[in-house]
Length: 131
View 1 (cartoon, rainbow, N blue to C red):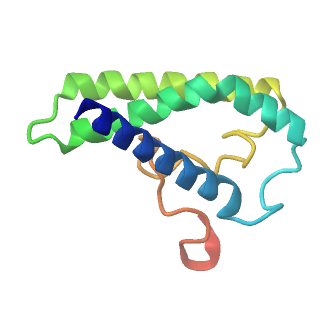
View 2 (tube, rainbow, N blue to C red):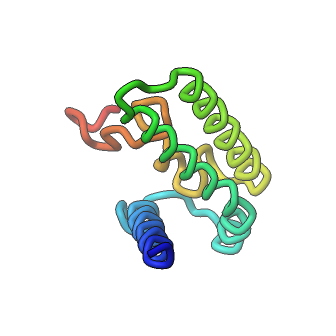
View 3 (cartoon, rainbow, N blue to C red):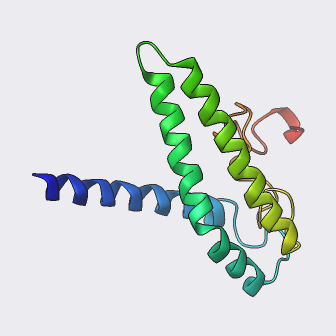
C-alpha cells in the first residue's frame, strides 16, 4: 500500500513539473521572453533546482493550510516568510547570471496578483493588455 502511495505521489509531482514546464516555455511561444543565453539558463536552472523544488513544496503547504477548516495563522505567516526568502535566493542567483527579474522569462512565473506566489490573471488578461 505504501509503495502504491509513493508511486502516486511521484506521478503527481511529475505532472506538476510537466505542466509548469509547458507554461514556462511553451505557454507564450518561442522568443517571447528574453534573449538569454541557453547555457546561462541551464546553469541557472541547475543551481536553483533544489530551491525551486522547495518553493513549490512551501506553496503547496501554504495552499493546504489555507484549505483547512481552521487555518493556523502562525503557520501561514511562517510559510509566507519562507516563500519570500526562497524567492529572494532564486532572484539573487538570477542576478548573478544576468537574468531579468523573475528568471529567464522576465517574471512571468510565480509573480501573480495574489501575493503568495500563485499565478494571477497573467499578461493580456485585462482590457487593452495594460496590466
